[in-house]
Amino acid sequence: MTNYYTTPARGDFPRLHIHTVIANYGIWAVLLRVLRAMLRAKRPPPSIVLSDHLRRDIGLPPLRAQARPNLHDRF
Image (cartoon, rainbow, N blue to C red; front, side):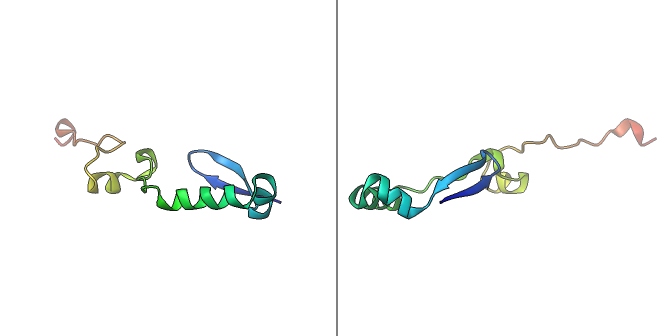
């Protein structure tokens, strides 16, 4: 059984059911991989998917240039 997940960066990608993974690789390989993933340091999300206000909160420049007021159109 295959589940499909959608992410903004990668689109649709298949993800195998846990029983299929255990049948293919064995219980110990799956258990060790899960434990390694749980102990791995967490990574921040890719900065391209963050909105401008979240980028500003963590000190990154905005993706979209801020619209500067045009002083010549005022008069």
